[in-house]
Picture (tube, rainbow, N blue to C red):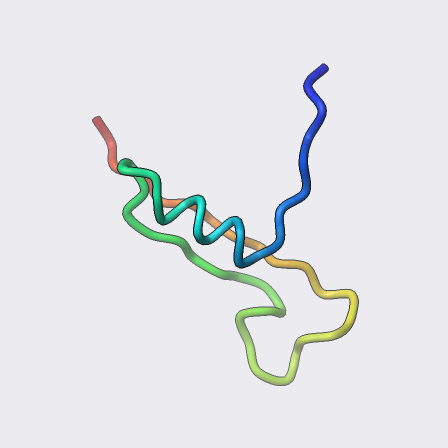
Length: 52
């Protein structure tokens, strides 16, 4: 099993933006809507990549 490293939201976005195949990120869930964010809300991200 490979150990997983936690990334902050900003670090993940920066890492994804550096990927040449990444064409977009989509934020979903409570973090994407004003008034729905709670201290327990996580980030639901979809990574959109270029299809070869």
